[in-house]
Amino acid sequence: MARCTAPYRGHRTASGRANCPACGGRGGYSSYSSYTPSYPSYRSSYGSGSSSGGSTRNRKASWSSPTSSVYYTPAEIWTLTPVRENVEKRAVIPDLRDVFLCHAWDDRKESAKELHDLLEENGVSVWFSEKDVLLGSSLLREIDKGLANSRIGIVLVTPNFIDRVRNEGIAEKELSALLARDLLVPIVHNTTFERLREVSPLLGSRSGLDTNEESMYKVALKLAELVKVEEETI
Image 1 (cartoon, rainbow, N blue to C red):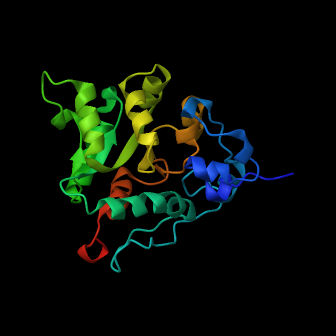
Image 2: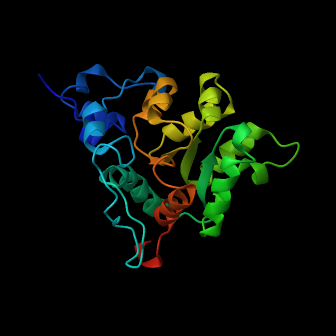
């Protein structure tokens, strides 16, 4: 019986799914709500985007500077590498923000602001609704512009965010647009990947970064490394 290749190759694209010997004949998926990911064997080896499952943070990423003190698990490097490749491709596009921060409205003055501030302290330019949506502006229109003008998206997954996605709030609309591109990094904060998979199987199937395993400060350092592109790389 053919085995699904998602645990180690991933089905990030329709072509990846088509080339899988187990899933190739099933057709594509139209939305993340209809997609059931194959993640158990991958997560049993590397953990759900964290250091669980025997995986330790003892590697530097290929994009890390020689003096970097930031270390990654194999799962983190696996999930961040395609995002990094897209960061380098998009580096030639002028006037882009480094990061679009997708978050629940209820987190805007606490955890989302904390992450925003830490990123900016580390030289990352961030699209953040609290400062980029002017009073009287159309929120959805400004979100569309922010997505189009950012190199990558990060999703701060909190209990509030999960509630918003479950109830199909603004966060769900942002998430749909971000999932259409391989430019997305989930950041799990005060919740788990297991709870995320209950409301968004596709987002939950991706490894990411987890503040249950590392501080928000260290997560911000990894994101800052991810989006920094030296001139010779461009």
